[in-house]
Image 1 (cartoon, rainbow, N blue to C red):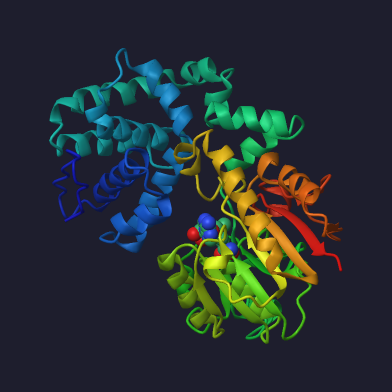
Image 2 (cartoon, rainbow, N blue to C red):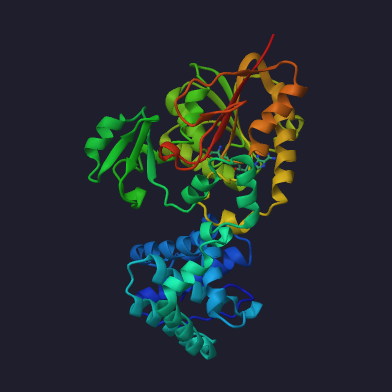
Length: 448
Ligand SMILES: C[S@@+](CC[C@H](N)C(=O)[O-])C[C@H]1O[C@@H](n2cnc3c(N)ncnc32)[C@H](O)[C@@H]1O
C-alpha cells in the first residue's frame, strides 16, 4: 500500500496490477509533500517511492521532475482551461490535472492513455466527483493546445516557468544571459561521474562501462553518461571507483592546489562530495569535515567509507567556530556556504517552488557571518576557496567585494581556468555552460 500523508485526503485504492497508476498516485503524493509541506524532492522521493518497482520509480520521477520544472507554465495553461480555481483542499485534484497536462505536453505517453490514466486515478480516489471535470479539462487541452500555448507565450513567468522574483533577479544580475540561464534551468542535467583516481583512471573505467559515456574537457576526473541509470549497478560502485558529481562541483578540489599532508577544513561539507574528491587528489590530507547537520554528516561518513578514506567529522555552526574549533590553524579551507542553489535548478526543480525572494537576504547575512568567522582559522599564506552553487551576484562576487573591504589580510588570487566567466571577483559558471551546473568560485589567500 502506498503511504498516505497525514492530513491529506488523497486515498488511492490502487489495483495492484495497475503499476502505472501506482506511479502516478505516488507522484501526486510527492508533489503534495513538496508544494504543501515544503519538503525537498531529495527527501520526499526516497521517502514516498519505496514501494515502486525500479521501472515505476523512474516513471514517477520523470513525472514529478517534469511537473515541478514546468509548474508555473502548467498552472497558466490550467487557469485558461478552468472557469473557477479549485479549493485549497483539492490541491491533489489540481496536481493530478497538472500531471495529466504534463504528460500531454512533454512525454511520449499517448494522449488517450494520459487522459484515461488520470481520470481513472481520480475515479478510484475519494474525489470521484472530479472525474468528469478532469476528463473535460484534459480533452479540451488536447483540442485547444496551440491556441492555449500561444496565449501564454508573452507572459515571461509562464514562458520560462519560473517565479517572477527569480526572473527579475536574473534580469538585473545578468541582462545578457538571463534567458539562457532560465532555459538551462528547464533542461535535464547530464549524469556525470567522478572517477576515483586512487582506484582506477577515467580511461580504464570507460573500458569497463557497458554504457556510452564520454570524457569532459573541463574536468579531468569526469565521465558523462549518455543515459541516466541506477549508478549502484555500475561496475565498482561498492568499491568506491566513482561518485556522482557534476563537473562544476568537481572544480573545487582542483582549485585549492592541495599538497600532500596538508591540514584542510572542509566547511559545510555534507554530504561530502567535495571531501571525497580532495582526498582522491591527495590521500594524505588531514581533513576536518564540518557541517551543522548531524544527519547529513552521517552521509559524509558513508560516502567516505565507500571511497575508503577517512576524515575528522565535526558537527557545528560555521558562524561560531569558537564552539567547535581546537585552535589549530588550517593550510587550506573549502568554504561551500549554504546558498540559494539557484545554479542547480535543473537538478532540483523544487527550488523554484521552495525558495522565496526574502531567503536571499537571510542567506547573504549567514554567508557573511561564516566568511568573517572562518577566516581567522586560515594560516598566513593558506588558501580559502569560497564556493556557492548560486548565480545571484549578491551571494557571489558582491560577497567577496564586501569581504575584501573588511579583511585587510585577505587577497584575492587569480583563478587560472577555462571554465565559466571571469568576474570582477572570482569566476561564475552558468548552468549548462560547458555541460556544468551553475557554480561560483573565489580563491583568497592570507597575507603575512
Ligand atoms: C552546499 S551544501 C555543501 C555541499 C558539500 N560541500 C558537498 O560538496 O557535498 C551546504 C551545507 O551547509 C550546511 N550548513 C548550512 N548552514 C550551516 C552552518 N551555519 N554551519 C555549518 N554548516 C552549515 C548544510 O547542512 C549543507 O550540508
